[in-house]
Length: 257
Picture 1 (spheres, rainbow, N blue to C red):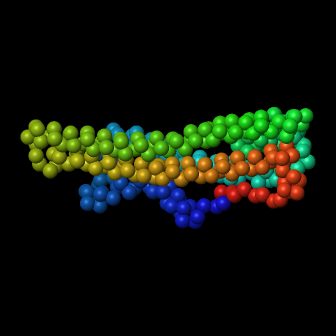
Picture 2: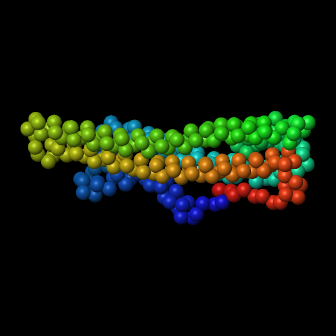
Picture 3: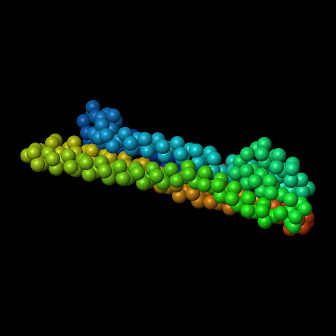
C-alpha cells in the first residue's frame, strides 16, 4: 500500500530541511555585519558544530538508505512472489528454492530457509519445522534492517544532547567573562552566540532524525507483517493444508513504494 501523499510530502520536506539546516542557521546573519559568512557562524558555534555536522550527514545517509531499501518492491518483489506461488501450487519445492536462492531478498531468504525443511514423507510436508525456520529467518532479517533504522534514533538523541552541551559551554564562557569583570555586550556575545547556534543546530538534526526513525520503523513493521503473511500462505499451499481451490485465489500483499 502506498503511503499517503501527505506522508511522502512531509518525508521529502524533512530531508530538505535537514539538508538546508546550515543555511537556515545563517538566518541571524541578516542582523549581523554584512561580512559575516556561514563559515563564521559555524566557527561561532564552537567545536561541537563538527560532531553535529557529522550527525546531520549520518542522518541523511541512513534516511536515504532506508528510503531505498525498506520498500515492498525491494523486500518482496511482486514478480518473484508470483513465480514462487506457481511453484507452490505445483508442489515443486526444488524449483522454488532455486528461484529464491538466485534472487536473494527478505522474502526469498525466508522462503528458502523454510524450503530446506520440506519433507513430503512427513505429515503436512513437515510444515511445523518449515514455519519455525521461516519465523527465525524472518526475525533475523528484521533485526538486520532494524539496525539501520535504529541509527536514526541514535542521531535523534545525540543531536539535541550535543546542542544542549553547546548551550552549557557557551553560557559558561559568558559567565567567565562576567567573572573577569567584562560585562560589555561584545564581551558576552561569543558565549551566547555559541549557546544559541549549537542549540539550533542540535534541534535541526534531532527533529528530522526522530521523524525518520518513527516513519521507517512503522514501515518496516508493516512490510515484515506482509512477508510473514505471504510466506505462511505459501507454506500452507505447499503442505496441502489449503485446498487447491483456496490456494489459487489471488492474494496480493500490499506494496509500498
